[in-house]
Image: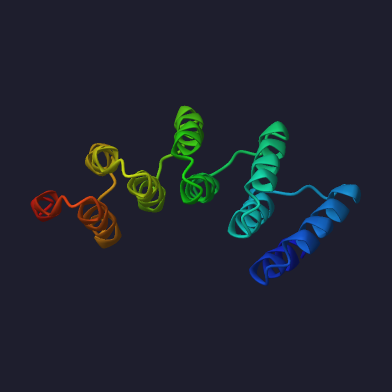
Length: 162
């Protein structure tokens, strides 16, 4: 019941209220699960409150609640949108040590982050790594790469992706 309400509140951008409900839940000794944390981490990230999202992530791991690929994707995306690609890579490295298999969404976020900071060749390395990791590129991956190359006037590289 709490998860459903917290999820709904976060979707309505009532993240502070959702966090208060989470705190009430914990005070009543009702254990939050990975879904609870994911919803709140996503909510704080979307509101630009990355520090709060990281705080919840740390709390989650301290309570031995294992993050999943969704948790990783949300944090990577949030860091990359803030142009903090180094921090995004740190989260990825930590998760890969825990054998969490990354998905196409996670790779998209990281590639987009590199393109935002005009490190398109690093984005291309990620693009090439995907296949080695068993993740097939999708149309969004190609779109990110094309826009990234075009933004730095490397149109030939964009064309050579095909």
